[in-house]
Length: 278
Image (cartoon, rainbow, N blue to C red):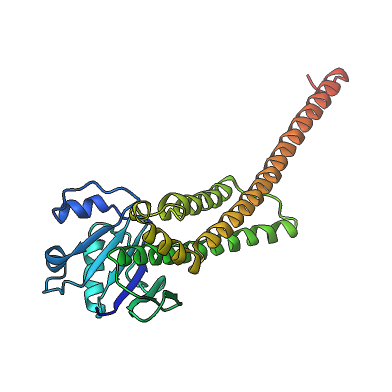
């Protein structure tokens, strides 16, 4: 059997698989746990050309697409343009920013071997393409999330610099925007990428489960997820600190206003007693 090539691209935060399936005439309700697999006649219609049976495209709900055995960039661009009709917010200008290329080699004389660029297996199993695609998709999605997290870190560092310079006031809108970005990052990682969830085939096949676990370990998905969670917790703690400082400053400001009003009232009363005011 020929080698199988994979190209995974993270292009957005979420893709509605059911809208695409409806357009393609696929009578199935898709959940977040499973990808939409397009091949054969459906893929030919989308690309507008004859397509080899070995080619397929897996679309994941968390915004990733994996192309199997697509050797030309033109086919990838045509498909992504088609996908953009369902997800207009997709940015196709930097489609290679979060991507990864991989391949599956079948060698009867070799044992299972995982590398950064390929995996070698002694014999082909039908579950290999989907499991490899799933791991690659989650990996590039995590890469995108990791970079977004760095952006949030930079924003918080700017706020910390302002505190060090004695600029203690932080607007509610600024705090709300930053908190929303952290929540969005956390939600995208847990709810969309679903690092801890496994494909259905791993629950019915011990070989599939073992292979998937080895792929997960090699790409360090669980470790990267734990690091992201710990960094997110730190961000929440920092935001809580900013909120406490901000509320304290506002509370102190209100207290001073009350004191000033009391002093003004006392002064007016004294002036009235002395007859200086009517």
